[in-house]
Length: 524
Image (cartoon, rainbow, N blue to C red; front, side, top):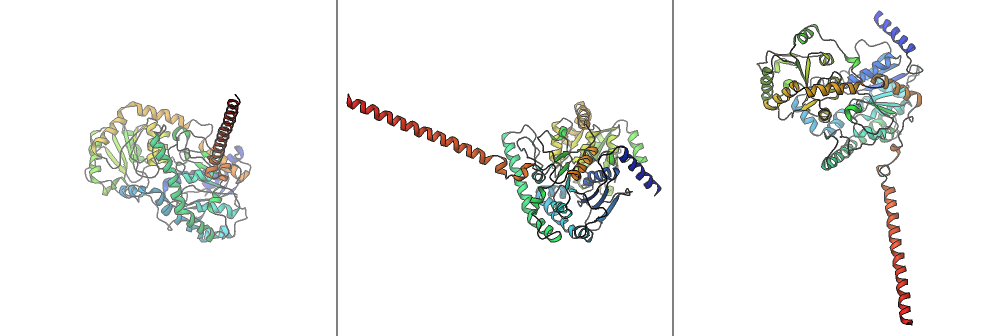
């Protein structure tokens, strides 16, 4: 208790010495997604806000351990849904990615809207606190857009937080043009410059998936907000247009340069500082003793390596055995599920402090599923990658790293010994990858202010200036107005009318001239 009080005093002192805003605000944060990796970003934002003196009330499945005094869990979702940590096999993850938009909408979107009916949520909606009142709602930009309606219920601005590269429906909410001619969609892995067929497919993929998402979510989520908030509430599509801004886990040096609306705030890597956990003593000794280098291998917080087919695991064992004395560190939730014969140079742990491992001087290669959080951690510490993307944004993430020269990619459907051996030896012994990783790391970290300071500034800005502060005019236009189809059509008609009129006048003049000429001939 004394430590918490001391930290609170230190935090208050820092806020006083280094003020970011004019006053402390009360913020409602709603993060229902059961993916632990997504909460790395959410928890970092929450810690950044509480560290600057703001009161943050949270709806979450993963409450903070040792929370500050100005942090309060108002609805704990533990027991109301199952955490996805170490719950997916490779096969299920591949299946999940086969129609990702549908799965996202029906599994990670619509069901969460029922949480609006929780007694704790209904108390906030029907009897909002006044001691003090809420100043802002922060929620995830993923598939449960229904929580945007809390801004309407509480009459406060809404800020979205996206752990992924922007989904098309987020861009639509912000009035952020999609630029499929040169920006890869969430659902493809094309890179600039794209060929004509790639631009066609990229464009189709963007708009088809946006329409699919709207088809699966609009009616259901509108019904939920009318049921739990207000029968006369405006449609969700209209509420989305009043989102003040979105904090997006991207940075242009990695994800590409594009024109952006002011409400599109890039804070890529914001989770890094808040989630550095030191290595356990046993693991640290093993890492320090690995002077020939370490390959770190994980498929993230949800997908388990040990669910790879046995033939794939045997191929990995064979390659890992041959690269000794280089060592391999693997995150394996259930070691007993591994085939027997684990090579002597391989260690497994059920939990690994990933940032600390990637920061270690002996880590030479990161074999990864390609999640944005994980790859940003490797990028921060200049570690080259071997990507094995499975679903979601993993394909487009790895494509970005390949383009920048610090990654190679393996096909999850073809993990035989030959490609695995090639990839590991290529990254280990071709210096161009480590050199590119170090250069891209410097570029990624070279910013005018930290990601955390950027996020907190714009959140406070949203409170100070309200929902319309950064509202793009694009949200008030239909697609054909935005693309100037009506203007170009009108101008085309004008040109056609001028050409037609000119031709008619010329014909008339030529006719008159011909008539005059004929009369002269008759006279003569």
